Image (tube, rainbow, N blue to C red; front, top):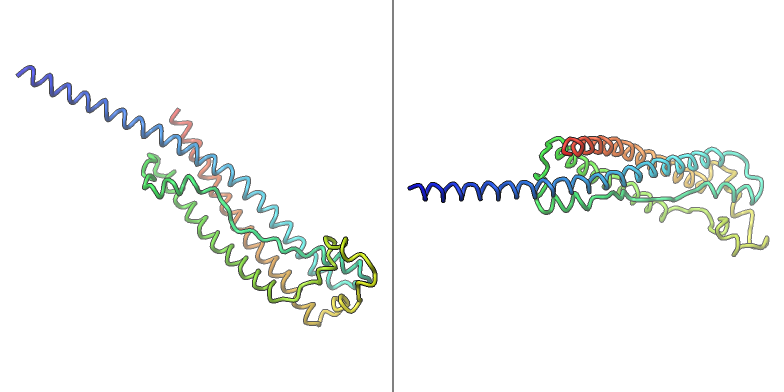
Length: 229
């Protein structure tokens, strides 16, 4: 009887040690994932800050164009300076989501013991997806707008000045419409710049909101890692 008890006790101890080892492996894996997510969040923080600056720059250029267009453009040089304010800079939302997708696709999100960290991570990436879809809609709309609109003659761009470098290549009739705010072309170009301003304002609001949520999750994970040391 005593031998049976010893065998049972030995089995229980072995199972306990095995369970401890498995728990320890899972804890190590959890901490590794937390570190990886933290790295992703830091990269996204830098990205959102850059995008906020970029949006502000585009909004400022579009605003300048809209108001400067109402001033008299007395020469080709004046018109070229105005054209330089036009920007069609466009970028879809690009975030670091490989770690999250790896966890989600493998069904491993339950690995996180801190429920607030897990819930905040899921919510953040849901917000990423929504913002990405909305920003893409903005960009697609403006791509269609540009493709159907009569934008500036490319030879008035400073980027092409090395090609169009002779006075006889230019005709005042090509740019004097800008001095008539009632003209269709003036109104069309004003609308394009106004829509670019609106688009980047909307994008900037998304970036600011995502940055705030990103920083909140960052703080949660840093605190969690500190508590687990």
